[in-house]
Length: 128
Image 1 (cartoon, rainbow, N blue to C red):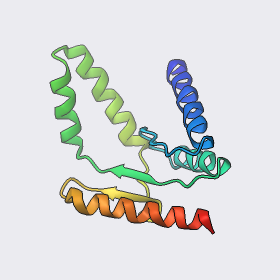
Image 2: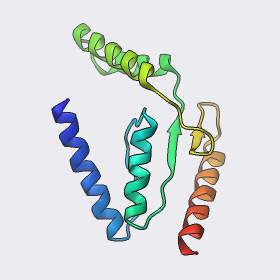
Image 3: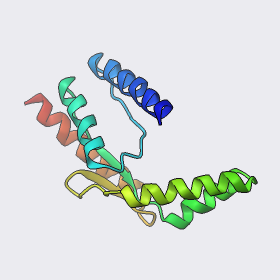
Image 4: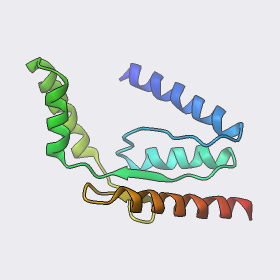
């Protein structure tokens, strides 16, 4: 847990540095708790930037299959399964107002078009 917190602090610091220098930042994190997403949105606002959550709605069985393919060690599978169960118990999916939701059956072109549309809205609001 302490290592994870240290990594998060470094990543958020790097995000702040990028935003304050005027660059776009893609922050890849699970953010299962809305408070985590709000903290990143607040960081973006502090830097004069917009914020958009892109939520990948991946079926749990797909996640488990990817985990199985990553290692043949049974003890690692047990840890991954425990972690998956913990995240599932904590997950509060973003509302449609909060995020672009990408479901497995979406077509990539439509998803990208929606992300671009939402980002353009954010940039337009920032320019006002």
